[in-house]
Length: 115
Image 1: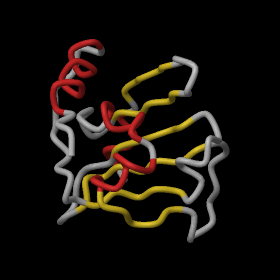
Image 2: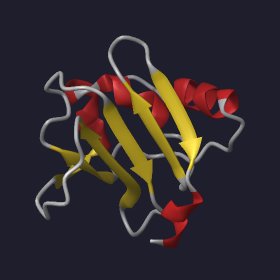
Image 3: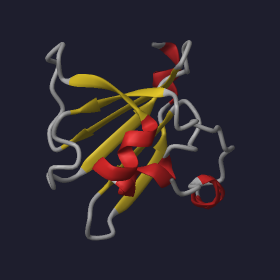
Image 4: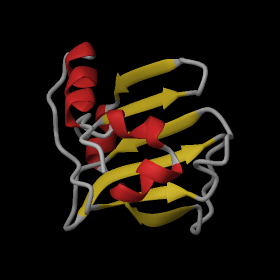
């Protein structure tokens, strides 16, 4: 398993924010279509709770379906969709949108801290 913390720190510096680690043995919410090739990939981070890191990741369109997100250990993203890993050091209250062609948008969304 590769160490992605250097890449995560670079992303945080690029967007002038602090680095908040997401250990590989912690849980995030991931939609089943992540890793399918569907784009764009979106992520948002709430405050961490217990052994979850507050991350929710999905590809394509968002759904309010209660089964849209499934719990997954972060370490499984290395095989499923490693493109995401370098963004998981962004702090709570941040979002990102990326694609496999080099598009990247990262922004702060303070409303995520109130949920």
